[in-house]
Image 1 (cartoon, one colour):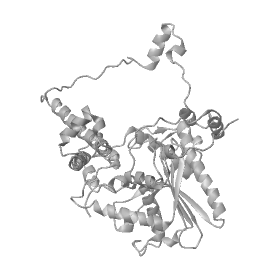
Image 2: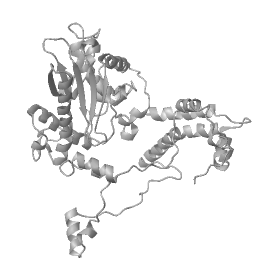
Image 3: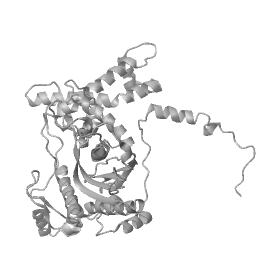
Image 4: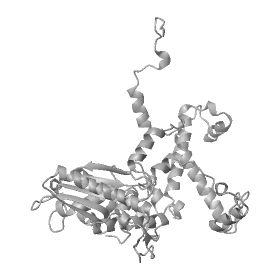
Length: 447
């Protein structure tokens, strides 16, 4: 096995889609950002609550995690952090009640921060992670589990989907390993019939809905993890290919995050090249002639040509972004690029001093507090995020019902899958447009 960075379940969306990403990311240090460090504090609070049998509110005012490598002074537990973590604890309590009703003769365990070693199922020692919460239901003296649930707590705002989530699938497989693995090494063949049922759950308090889950059979989970294992072994190849996609946004080698990878730019150029080769140009002519029409006579382009150029928008923008990055790089190193220079962006005004100093100075000029801090009505989104100590869930639901409505956005151009579009067209192929429907033969009266 090659000596490279580990395959974490949390990063599986990257390495399962781009085998070469493991190689490319290996040269970058694993540094946590401020948001990730703050999230670690919430995860620690969740672990303490489970292990010590305490509510999150009981920790308010305490400092936890002193001496942590990322935050030596620890995290101060405030009301908002406690409310977020308590939401996960409440869900765990709810699940216990539901599972007790479903399995009246079962015993139950809940574990925090438990290692999920999925890689060993496939002979790897570099594919494992730590599961935030694991719930098991089992009967004494019987092999296997009646039910297994893994919960991943997310403290941020970036939406994380639960459906076919490869991180949660890896956690489930790792937790199933002692029950489904064969032989002393607990490897294939997998005895998935020893697990009665599974659930993968995301608890993310800063999103709506904050709790979402997917139920699945052990066999279905392992079928997906088998595919992940193939992707895991593909990362071992010295020339493992780079594949650009949505997963690039989290990759440490992404140029937008200070990395060096050029896969996205190269793929974009290939799309533009393919577009220029495949573009349908009436009566012959060159690509330059079509580009000229885009500027001078856009209406002369066919629908197919318009769609092809629209498809090329993102790749072309990426290509020009790379050009601008290179120009800036050369200017910063003292080279001259005709027509370009590094100049200050539009300036803005900022206060010099702390907020307390500025407020004191403004009050000294007899400004009223409402002039210094202009009031603004709280938004519906801000109202929904208020802690339970200010508004209970029932009060929020009542306000939402009585005073909040959804404002539909205006129609905008949106790219859709051509396959879905063709499918929809076939579905309504026999339906006549409104203009073609025959008018009634008799006049209709509304009086």
